[in-house]
Length: 486
Image (cartoon, rainbow, N blue to C red; front, side, top):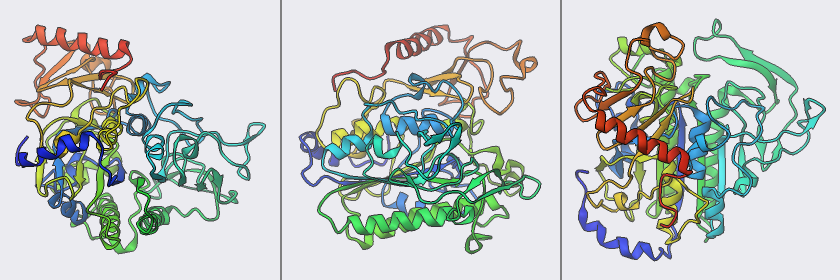
């Protein structure tokens, strides 16, 4: 922890009994945005990100924030439930645009909790947690409501699409009802557009891939302006589909990033969404007491074209090894900025480890509430860090999961990977057995000395390996990683 004003800690006991002002909560989750893509995390980065730069100057930057998974669906499950997704039926991979719901019936979520505390709750964007399309035999009936989607998981208002923006069907669903029935099939191949492609599938007449990000941004800004007029506090979960494929910067953003890269331009366009929402909060006069978080679901995807970016001096993973899908740091270390002028000191930095599963416990402590024993099993409140920090780590340890189900556990400077490979898409992949057959079956890295995970020191530290293996086993078998009574 550095550059923190410890004097702010005096307000912690007051918060423990609940803040009668009940701050608004805005949570923007980018898709496949790398740790090194924002200048607030990577001063050597080549992409213009003025919106998040401003947010960082006015808030707190977390340098050691992580998604619980290195891919989309399980991370989103963790954000909303405060629970590692490997505890669900999601043991590896991601859901499709036609998958059934993942968040279990009756499970507490951030929106259901906040709704119970008097909040208006809204989801706008990419869901990717499954819902149940109405079926006529095996065929989807887009004229009927969907079930077990955002509405059933605690959101009073919802507007979005089911999977990633490259996954059919391309249909908007608002408050559980498709806004239009598909009338055509659309798709674009990699040959037609290097990273602006999407899979062929049913597309509604009101669904325009190029206008998806602008559409979601407009709706988020409108929501903020409307809710600011009400006495009720609000929670907005804005899950962006960008800069995930298809990479589709609009004409106004082409060439605006500072690099010759469609991906970089799309990052700048994504960053502008953050600025527009922040400006809306300020213009509405509610930004002072709004807990505003901007982060990403995992690391950058190879679809960004790493070679093209490297030639221009930009690395989306910054100094870290790997990328999306991997168990290495580049797969799950993510940008994370918090702005809350009423409580968080501007221009501060937090080096303590935090995880995207921590939102539920954080809002509970902000409101002076305790979570039940069957909720937020892997969620730790980061409120003490937001208020200045105690100087001690808030998390005992943090678990990560790769696309193929490989585990890692992090405690302090030590990170143990329960496999000899990447667990994902970078070399050595799980399929490249010839490359790792003679390597140690366990990887251990000292991240203080070796942030790039280049030196496996498992052989030199058997006691650390044994300790972390035992803790990982305890977390996996015990059903939770934080005490039930908090």
